[in-house]
Amino acid sequence: MRQVGFTAVPPGAKPGFDHADTYLDPRGSRLYVAHTGADRMDVLDCETGTYLRSIAGLPGVAGVLVDSENDLVFTSDRAVARVSILRASDEAMLGQVAVPRVTMAAIDATLAGRYYERLADHAVAVGRRVTYMVTGEHADVT
Image (cartoon, rainbow, N blue to C red; front, top):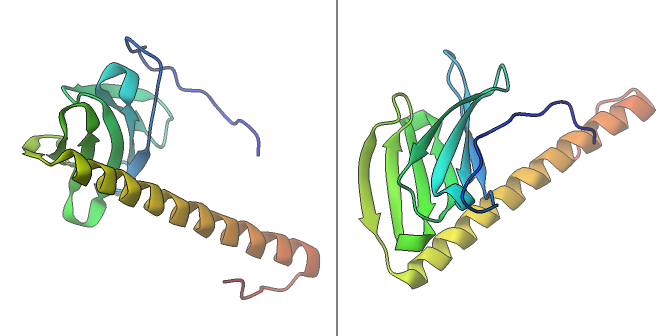
């Protein structure tokens, strides 16, 4: 693995980033990053790798989950025990739902599980590429 770029974002009051997710759209995909130390979600352009803007008012935002198919972005706002729901296409706030603290832990665990699954998917893809590079054959690595 090697660094292929760097994107500067405005600093937060405290250090810290958390989970991120990607909104896939033919008109332009965006990466939403939970900027926990700034209580906001930073938005990056996937094609150019540039910082676009921030969405503030998300205290302790600890995770982002994107549902591109349904045009939704969810954030886990840990500091106030709630989930915020935005429409991805225009980033309009659709609602904020208070959840019990014990539910916040379950939400965080669900987000972590999803990211482990994505990591495993990438590992399988790397395994397929290495097999092809070494043997010249496409392997069914699952």
